[in-house]
Image (cartoon, rainbow, N blue to C red; front, top):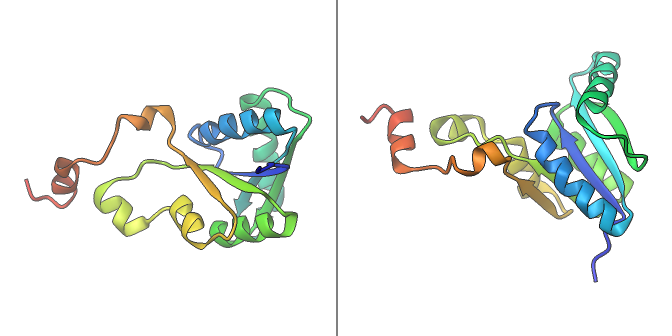
Length: 147
């Protein structure tokens, strides 16, 4: 049986990242897990990052004693993986932003790269507003200006 004692939820402070927090909180209640809410900023912005994360938590999340907000500096993909491994996270739960077509091919996604590179299981959550926005042939054709 799998017990999820430590759950990592990376956030970019967008409303989309709240979808991941919903799932993580549900797991957290079931397993009495500790949740880490990780926000990665560019170097030199640690204090601004802490203030922004604090404001995000106060505005967007109900008080939860088992949630530990954490701010790190660096490349989000590297720092998410590093933090998860150092803390012994049992799972990473993160939202996707639903980029499609050419934008996705050019930019990729932090979630996709974490899934590919992490040794820890990753659950990706598509936020409700994006669930019906599935990639269609027309999307690719429009992005590539084929129509």
